[in-house]
Amino acid sequence: MKLQEIIEICDKHKNIIISGHIHPDGDCIGACYALATILHKRGINASVVLEDVPDTYDYLDGSKFLLETIKEDIDVFISLDCGDKDRLGINAKLFDSAKTTINIDHHISNTKFADKNYVLDVSSTCEMIFEIMKDNMDLLDKGICESLYTGIIYDTGAFKHSNTTKRTHEIAGELIKYDIDFTDITNRVFYYKTFKALKVTGKAIDNAQLFHNDMIIITTLTMQELKENNYSKKDTEAIVQILNEVINTECAVFIMETEENTYKVSLRSKNKINVCEIAKTFGGGGHIKASGCTISGNLSEIKDQLINQIIMQIEE
Ligand SMILES: [Mn+2]
Image (cartoon, rainbow, N blue to C red; front, side, top):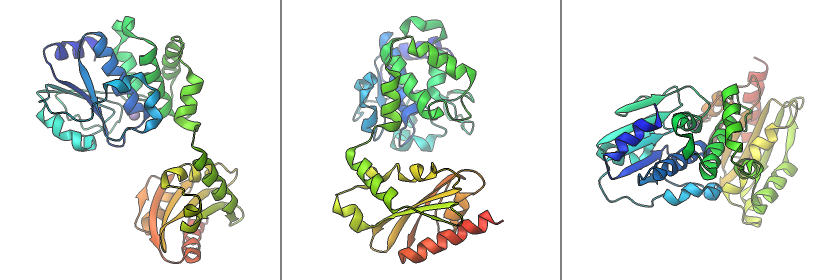
């Protein structure tokens, strides 16, 4: 697909909506903002509709195209970074009402749910948006480059994940020509945190313990500890990942009390342990290396049960 094709479709219409998946991430948001900016530069009044955009991405200039509510009928609906229609969330209704639909995505599981579908197995939707612009490089500007760079680093874990290719690096190279502050973008996307998040992480690190020949690392936070400093759930997001960074451990567990005797458990693994299986035995789920569940009961018993399940997998 080329940008010209999208422009030709949009030129015939008035109400153009760009959207993406629920719980939008850096790639989804970056791609929507970049495409909206590109279309505006060609005189097309496209708007972005996304639910609950994290304030992490407020630095992106394209956020000015984000609409709160849509009243009018939709002519063209462009779905970005979304594998199936259900993942559009409440915006699936807008998709259904549109006269023409376009789907641009990099999830191999994409169900090709639109009138026009463009699905490639590449690092990110932002990488696809860059490629679409091939014949219109004059439209590229600093704001668009910041959006595309944000999406590429988000989905590749800053060029760390196996979806990173030579081409991904080449595109990033083209983007940094526009004098974008890539250090600041990387810090905002991955590292900057609130002081409260830093303090609660410190508390969790302080509580951490090793088990089973130092192969399992576990930490806990009780409601009492969370309340003391008014910590919220959002402040605790980075904790389990930090535990998993301890060298030579196989499995990291973060147990947080959410109600009296009810605990939210987050699990991460490095190599052979399938934490999704462990979460499933407690009614949860997720991915092989990242999963979660909620368990009710006594904290020390819950800890013992989790340790036993992990040891069973280590010794398999
Ligand atoms: Mn993506």
